[in-house]
Length: 138
Length: 115
Image 1 (cartoon, rainbow over the protein chains, first blue to last red):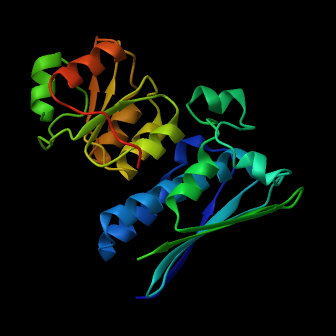
Image 2 (cartoon, rainbow over the protein chains, first blue to last red; image 1 turned 180 degrees about the horizontal axis):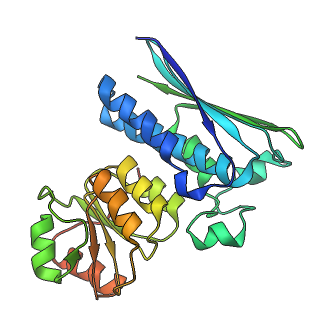
């Protein structure tokens, strides 16, 4: 079973935020991925997708299944993160008041991703963008 | 506690129509979506004042038993349609979030544990 799909995520449109995560979940369900792994991948893809919509100028989420792992990669073009350790701190957020009123911007996105993935890596360049790779062992 | 028990005891109105009578495994109340993503688990009842598209996305991704909107807060028709499409049950209640939590707890629904 080898699958590799890439889904574009547009910046700014909160009404479709979550659609890519929903498509990835449907695919995992079809493939019979165990429910605990499916839940953890869903949390991570959703948080990544929301970050792309809220913070980036657009990006993509890549979903790959190999014999041993599920790998989710988030890539964006955007402002980047000047201080990654700060961004990884629970409660720290740069989200606008508008999205905070919708219940986003709790500063839990990146911590949720790190907690739910078996392996998590993030690299970011200010003024260029952010790349995140999350691996889940099947 | 099943969804039908919750309906009977709370008098909440189901906005999404016919649905499977699922068991409520646990409950949680919070309006910050990332906290809910961190805490959420399958078959959970989620009480929130947020009533927009992203609530449905979270509930569908984590396979919640239901979403309960307290204090008769308005829920847009488009949200209800999306919930029906995703098989998410939405209730509207005249009770406050606190009253709803008490009702669930008094009837044996435990708090959601952190995933």
